[in-house]
Length: 177
Image (cartoon, rainbow, N blue to C red; front, side):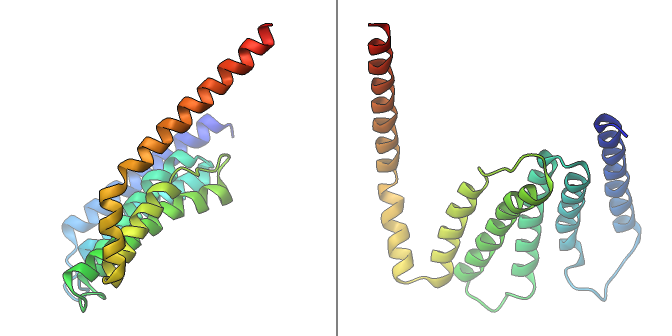
């Protein structure tokens, strides 16, 4: 089966699965399972991940990781991790959401034709902020300082881009001579 037909088949199965999931949620009442509705996003994320794995398409893994991260984060904060303070719950939410972003890189490296590395950047930021919120104290102080000084990173990046461009022009002019 060629890639186009396989991708169409997987896309159709994904739509059918999402529709079936929503339809079941409309008509089936499961009062014995607390926070059951919060499992919708992780299930949807899992469907996108599965579609990405089956089609070897990393593009489908992106919504899969994001939906799974947000879904599991909401589930954990509403259920097992209600013991913490609001700040700690925010930390747990962000740390779990960061894992969703990391899962995109891991799953794409294992199953896709192309590994997506860029998702590690938001994962690192979310994990840093989430860790600071969860642990508090000195970590929050560091987060506050970083919140004030982060524009320095933009300035440094701008200087680096200008120096790199100047070096390229210099090399180009030497090549012409």
